[in-house]
Image 1: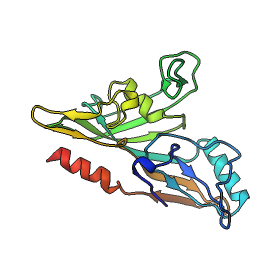
Image 2: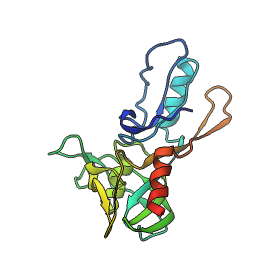
Image 3: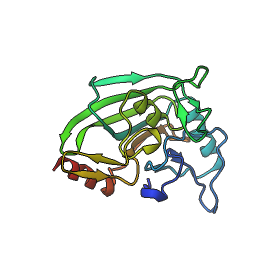
Amino acid sequence: MCASEGQSAPTACAVTFFAPGRSHQISPPARTSPIAINCVPVIAPPNTDDAHRKLSAQFAAREVKKKYVALVHGWVKKDSGTLAQSISRDRVRRTRMTTRLEGGRAAVTHYRVVRRLDTKFGKFTLLDVKIDTGRTHQIRVHVAAMGHPVVGDTMYGAPRQARGKNAVIGLGRNFLHAAELEFRHPQTGAVIALKSELPEELRKFLRKVEE
């Protein structure tokens, strides 16, 4: 597993496939699931093109389990829930996605509240998030649609800085991290579970917020 963070993070946050001995990324037979700009990705390296195709098929069949950690603005009311609004490309701002248009692609996001934070910078909620689908910006769009944008995600309504009465804090990336990935080995069928710890940049931000 590999994690890349900060402004240099890939624009597609998901599983990225590489074949040993090749200097370029393999183009997947089925598109893997892009989630978020500035999200820390998990990288799983298959050793053959056949293994790569089988892994991609697992994504297409929604058999791969993906878990993310997100810090969002405000207190999410329900302890857990499912967000199932369809997602479309914004007709005006083409780099954005939206839940406000009819005829979008089906998208399903499940969340669970880890804890609610009442800080000098305002209120936040730390979430565990699982997705059944992998639409562009899915998590970011869904949590923003319920009024709780991901911290740092100015594209979907988060402020550049969180301000309290006498305190200001900012984050130069989205507080969205690909934490766990589970899939079947393409040759043996054994379940493989990968985990990635929260990167130091996000842990440091969380510690400062909770001071």
